[in-house]
Length: 142
Image 1 (cartoon, rainbow, N blue to C red):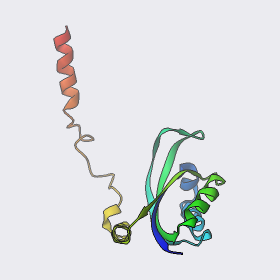
Image 2 (cartoon, helix red, strand yellow):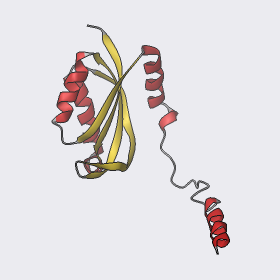
Image 3 (cartoon, rainbow, N blue to C red):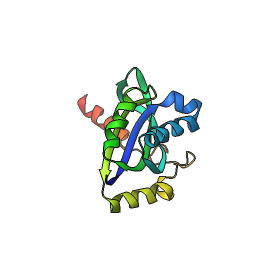
Image 4 (cartoon, rainbow, N blue to C red):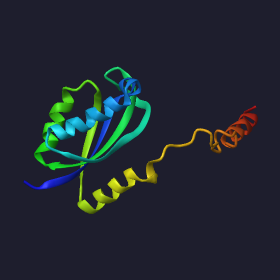
């Protein structure tokens, strides 16, 4: 069977990830390897508030993994993930080899470095002009 190139986004229980980040990463890669896939690159993407609660969870960790596997492996991953309490949601996309290689290279490079919390953005520095516009609109209403 032909080997395909996949991108998997897994939303994990952020509390479990916070308690043991290595175990969460190992769990995602183990799921892929269990079905005969080979993980080329993986990393946490973002730990954030979810748009809506999933199984009572209000926060989740988006975990990105790039892997190669046979096409039947996707159905097997879907089955395994349904039984896994740590994975809240997942999405697996198939890519052509050229795009896949570029994305794997980016995940391993500087494109996904973490944001420095000490660097101020315009909004955090108080330079957001939207608030001043709202105040002037209130004066016109009186």
